[in-house]
Amino acid sequence: MNKHLKDLLINFHSKGRRYSYYPSLPDWSGDLDKEFIIDGLDLEEINLYIHIPYCPSLCTFCGCNIKITKAKNQFRSYINKIIEEWNTYKLKNPKISLSSIYLGGGTPTYLELEDIKHLLGSIFDGTEVSPDFIGTLETDPRIEQSKKLEYLRSVGFNSISIGVQDTHKDTLLNVNRDQSFEQVKDLVNHSRDLGFDEINLDIIYGLPFQTEETFKETIEDIVSLSPDRIANYPLAKVPWQMDLQNALGLYKPLGTYEMYDLYIQSDEMLKDAGYNLLGMGHYSNKGIKYNRDITGYTRAKKTSLIALGTSGISNTRDYLYQNDKILEKYIAFPNAAIKTHKKSNREKTLEILFAQINCEGRLRKETLNTCFEENQIEKLSKNIKIFKNYDILVEDSDSYTTTAFGKHFNKTICQTIESI
Ligand SMILES: C[S@@+](CC[C@H](N)C(=O)[O-])C[C@H]1O[C@@H](n2cnc3c(N)ncnc32)[C@H](O)[C@@H]1O
Ligand code: SF4
Image (cartoon, rainbow, N blue to C red; front, side, top):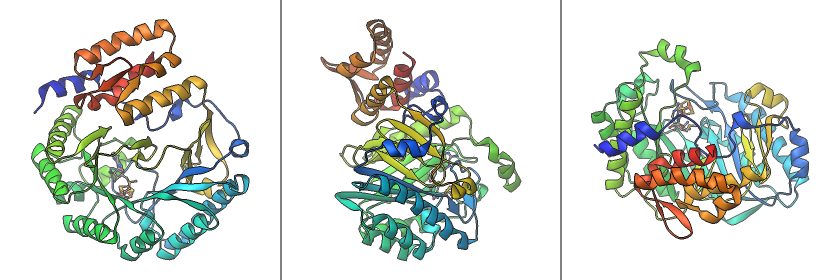
């Protein structure tokens, strides 16, 4: 176990944002009208996020915006609202085209095949699609979805993100997730056979009952499937679900130090298996450059992200805004936003700096100089010196670069820059 890393994680890591967009929600200022924002946009090639909140059963750790239901007859009216929202964008931005679509959730393939066809048929209808289109879906290995995956491949989807979480029956059952490793394996193999060229597996460390031994086996299991990407998430504790969690079984997530042990052990194992840490717990075994957005790390190009559906956060050059998080309210007013923000010039430069650190692994001195006054640069230099002493950053004439070790501290570097 890497004691040096653990000591630094204890010293440097603090709770907070993951810099997948900036500024984060609590710092948004505005109550602008979404219609006003959309009127001012001049959208051409965009990335599209579509939120499908539905799942058949509740995993008690879940921190996503979800609706558990068996009533599949309600899906169509929700999808029609998403289409209504999309048509508003299209009407006002006739040149809009698609660089990527990300179907997130919830569990998008819990929708009926006909609903998925209706949704995507309407989105693609009369809309230009980039030749290097990236289509991604999040899914759950417990869902019967062969026909749906075939359809998604036929309309250009090429990337799949599968929730595994853990491979131990006891750990999974305790969070109300009755899932076998065979189901995961079958879905990975099926996706590969269909030609999905990027397969990501999600796992979570910090769940009740996980130990170094059990989590080691979980890592061995997922590595045995050779996914292209692995997302190793720290359990985000969601207090509003505590009652439900306790009602279903003993729910005692691991403490911070135990979580660091699992993180360090899994990081070593993943690197030994040929995976590189991109940052924030995301790994890839491909030597390609990823961009970072609200969906995590993505092969999609960096451009405006428009989010459709309940709770979706859109991120354009000048604005951030979020759709209503309450499903019923979104259905009533799909073209309303609950919160908005107009980015300042300083925030836009910080956004560029965070992208540099999280995606390129470096901070350009030129960008730092455009963002900060001389006295701020001096203050930052003192912090950078500490990072250099700990082998987190190295300096050359025009930039600071993160070492492989330093990538564990991307968030700390971003927090430091933000605090200047
Ligand atoms: C929106 S879910 C979609 C995946 C799919 N519904 C499934 O469960 O297989 C995306 C991922 O978020 C992660 N996640 C959800 N709740 C979390 C929490 N409280 N802490 C950390 N990760 C979480 C899980 O790893 C999950 O696979
Ligand atoms: S983890 Fe996935 S399947 Fe479970 S409740 Fe959350 S979104 Fe639904």
